[in-house]
Image (cartoon, rainbow, N blue to C red; front, side, top):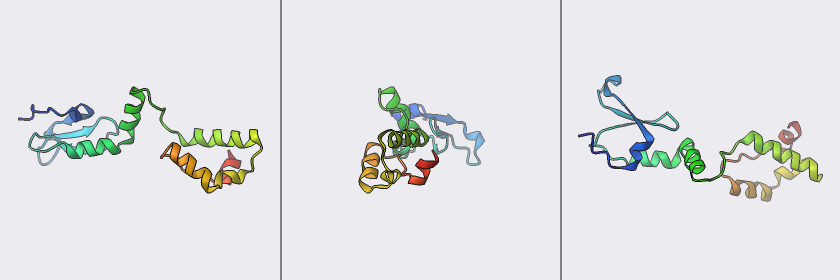
Length: 123
């Protein structure tokens, strides 16, 4: 019965034997973030698994990299590059706190966390 896995979503999950669980049901664990598990039976649909992949940052990063997309965003590298740009061009450290500047950076990458002038100075 469980061999009817036609959805491509199954390729992104590891199936765990049901003996590991009190209810005896097999589970599917995300191969990317390794956190969420779903009951792995053909009686259950894959929509929750698909929704998980849409939100899973580890899966999205893998998918983007395999499709020639951007590298994974790293806040520390962003902060360091921003500090270097401020120093190189002689901007005031308060520049990072300008609302329009923050909107631009958030638009370019939704994972960016706004930083304060003190954080930039410390970097």
